[in-house]
Image (tube, rainbow, N blue to C red; front, side, top):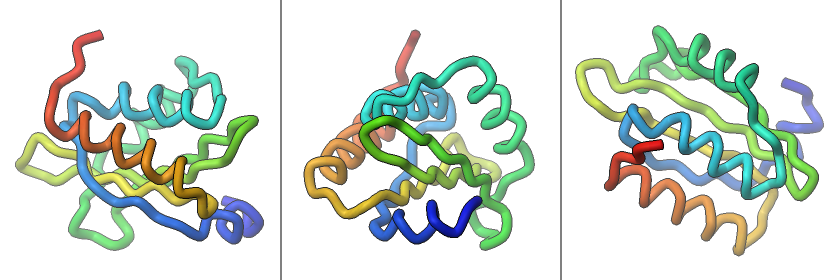
Length: 115
């Protein structure tokens, strides 16, 4: 991850989603920043998420969504033995973007999306 991306992402939103909703999460976050997530993105995220552990500070998978509107740095980690994935989204300070991210996370923590 480049230092400029880390430096520009100074606000974080943390929550969890149902593990079955990780793909809808990525697709929804990508849409917020006008990034076209595709099969390559999903393959990378799916592979990177294997073996993650939310309790291990070094056990997270980090993936950038570089859109035309904003850039998000999404950190994901499974919670072994449960059906949730912990998520932390880093982004530039923007109250509207923060509210949208929080809404997406809230919905995907409560309801399983069937696509």
